[in-house]
Image 1 (cartoon, helix red, strand yellow):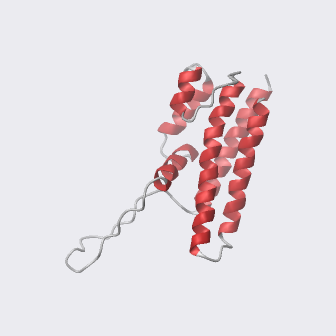
Image 2 (cartoon, one colour):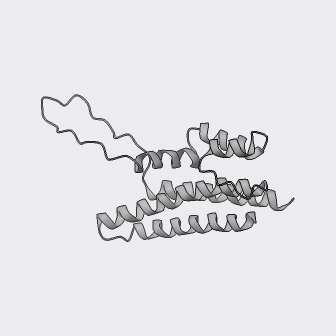
Image 3 (tube, one colour):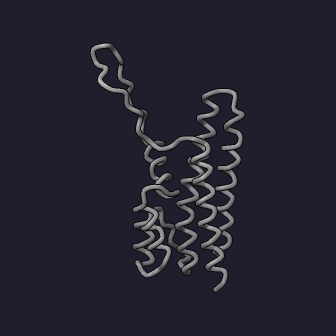
Length: 158
């Protein structure tokens, strides 16, 4: 049963990668943004489905956690994946935190642009936010895929 969930997560990752490949070839900014947002949404869905996959690995056939906290409430703290997810969520630079940043960025309206004049220029600042490069998202997808492959291998040995 868990292998079906592994296949589903793998398919979402594959589709996200397919959108990213097309991003460089997109001829208009709206198309580029649509491809980008589609790839991000597929990544976020992959992470959510990964949580469901883990619950299935532990024979929970009904739960469909949407967050790490929901998965912890359903399975407890005594499984190694909870510790792995906690380490990722508390980390500073990994696929989990990159997806957190992208999710935050994608679910908020863009910040208002301030007008610049000679009177209000104090310093030049770089806009804060997640790395929205195709390379960064590709790296995140590769790390996520590696994680689910390792998880599937670990549990298929049992």
